[in-house]
Length: 120
Image (spheres, rainbow, N blue to C red):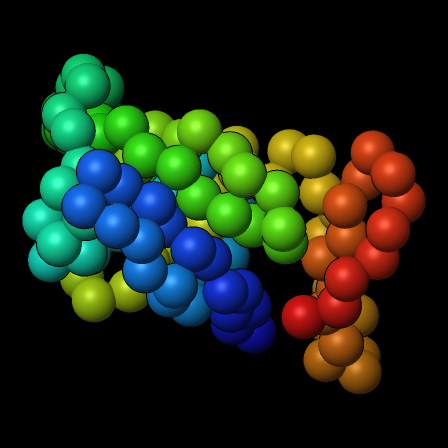
């Protein structure tokens, strides 16, 4: 089951709204296609070690940015990908509740702190 959510990514050169794939195996904030990061003028902030599910280990560059997710503005660390798919990681979801009903295929993401539900 693939879960897609709209995500507004904000950088020094503007903003863009994209659909991000929720990836519960990604413990970071956001992973963006390289061309999106270039378009937004994201700033390099650090590098981190990364372990992939297939056993690969590497070092990834991390960029600073902001995202608007379900109306909330978040400062995030962004990792780049050569893929065309943006990923939403579990760190960005830490103040939300993700409910999946596999039988019906219904998915709901809700803000945890105030209890306001917003279905996707």
